[in-house]
Length: 135
Image: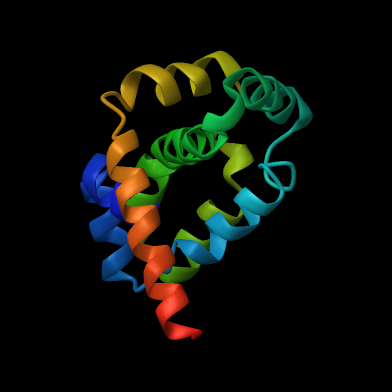
């Protein structure tokens, strides 16, 4: 996700680097719970529908929605003056996402073109690195 954020939301990524915020601390729980812990039901239930519709492309759907959520948080994160303010924004993204249609618009239109091949390549690379570390 970090690489995608750097590509799609460069100012956001630079702001996180400035405060030394590790996005994976937030994204891990988002992905493990499929956004249930951070979004209201009127947002996460339609996301589940998209997961079911997309089938085996669910990993791309996770990344699309994560990027869209970050995009919707972006202006508040960029206005944050302290690391705790950044953490507050990323810990409670539901305050920035209240309309599923807008979220889907950002995920499936504003984030295009979406680099599926690049994600597959990076996923393979990171998997190989993990396997090398643990063998």
